[in-house]
Length: 95
Image (cartoon, rainbow, N blue to C red; front, side):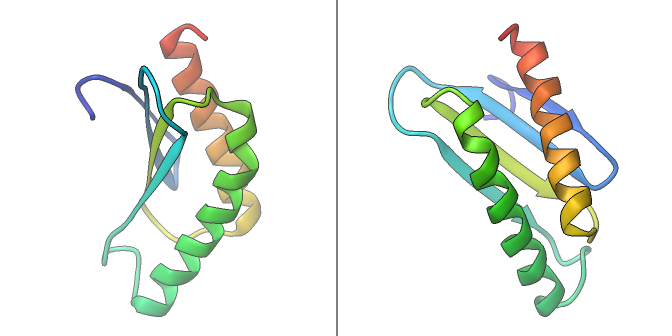
């Protein structure tokens, strides 16, 4: 996926975006052990799922998004950074 799509990063997130020919939009999350213990990683995943669901209507229906968390952050930080990173990806795709 990485070679065919685009990537944009912020302080706490890296977002990979690829647009396919058909199919529904999909979101994948990567939260490594570097982020923290299991409780912290699950909290980060819950926050990222919520902010990703809010951003899905702004994307094309065939989008594949992978969000990689680099470090724990607040909900507001994740929301702002995901919006910024997705805007960067869209700009790189020319959409």
